[in-house]
Figure 1 (cartoon, helix red, strand yellow):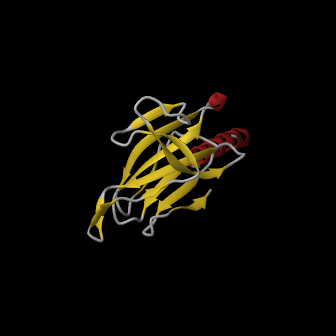
Figure 2 (cartoon, one colour):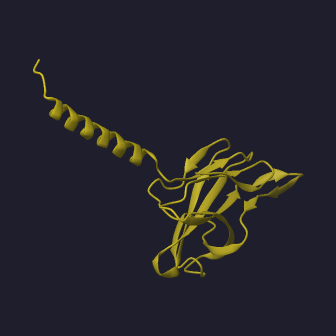
Figure 3 (tube, rainbow, N blue to C red):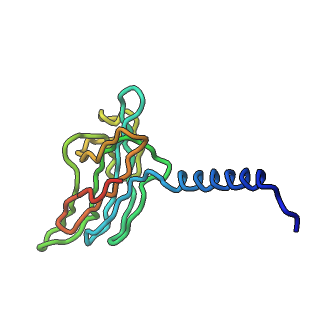
Length: 160
């Protein structure tokens, strides 16, 4: 085994430290996570700003009861709006579903997955539905967890 000089050891240590910092930075992702504590499947849609003042709405991510999932691990936004809709279920002898969202309307397509640009307006086959605003950050990107609970409310339980 060959000995290395102190100068080389310092350089190698600095490279290793830089690599560890790079890994730590990439591991600290900004994610928007949704969790379902409602006793039925919940479908999730989000809307977020685009350049020029327009909005993009996307849906539907399906969440089984007890599941949590990031909407899109590549998504990096400073704010977002969300909407949740449960599957149809029977309650009190009636067929019903819950929905979460209020405050601002964005385009959705009830019967299929969608991506709508200029979603602040009714576009193509869309209808306008209410979304709730998530947190907003002045930093690089928002991180938040939104939970749909048994009372039928959408609540933001953590903001990172």
